[in-house]
Amino acid sequence: MKTLELDPSFFPSRAFLILGHLHAGRLEEALAALDQVSANPGAQLLRALVLAAKGDRMAAQQLVTEAETRLAAERFPRGPLAAARLAVGDKEAAFAWLEKGVEEQDPILPLTVKSNPTWDPIRSDPRFQKVLRRMNLD
Image (spheres, rainbow, N blue to C red):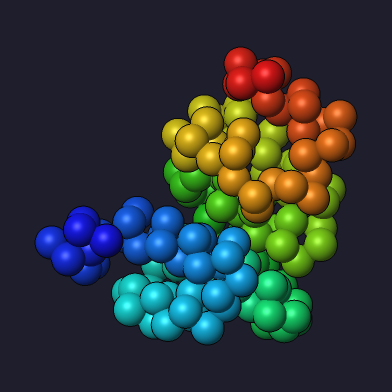
């Protein structure tokens, strides 16, 4: 929280705050924190995660599709795209983005993939274990 007191617009800190609210089930707090973020692709994907958790999969799916269209050819961390796909129930696309993230050496994946609850729905899948091995995190 100290970082956000010093710089309320620092997105990485805000993103971890939003994820903390999300994983604790505090969805309204997550949305309120999102409302304090200027529009960017990462915020759009976080909003999709929260909306999916609230049960609004159609709105979440629309946000994910828009983000994918815009970001597919850009240099953007693939982990958030994979997480958003997983949140809307598309495990195959989630694994495709995870694999792409490993290939492109996504700098966020090693920080989150082993311990973040986002990945719990696929943690037991052999493909997830393969991703961990490819990143030397097994």
